[in-house]
Length: 155
Image (cartoon, rainbow, N blue to C red; front, side, top):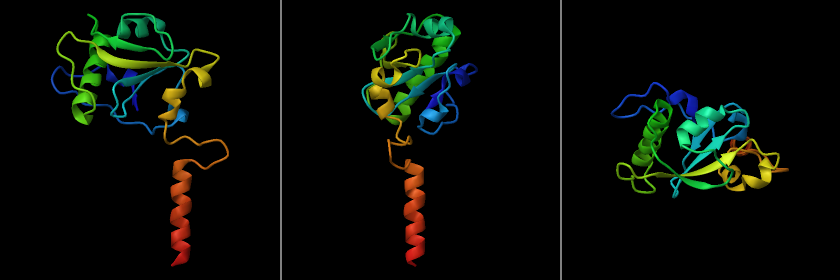
């Protein structure tokens, strides 16, 4: 996952992607905009419940609704251009769908934290947070640690 606010000072050529965050809901912040790409047919964008609505509208060129697939067209503002370059760089580096031609929209799946029905409206996004715990089970990190300790104790 990549935090959207870290994309402001990106260069024009090759984009240096910001540091990745663990793929867990505990790293999502209410005031943030986050990108998640799993090699599928679109890039997921999580919009926090307290994210600046003017910034979100600048990036997308529209007021978003949750769990909607949109074509993100590059708007004529720095915020939109920076996020557009990051999305293109993700597609270029990690494959999946083919890069859009200039002027063509990038497919983006929106997930919004603003809704009181967050967990029912954003199932597709939440399913991609692979480091989250499943109800009554260990997190992935805890599971790996547990397996490692079991292997160590068998020696």
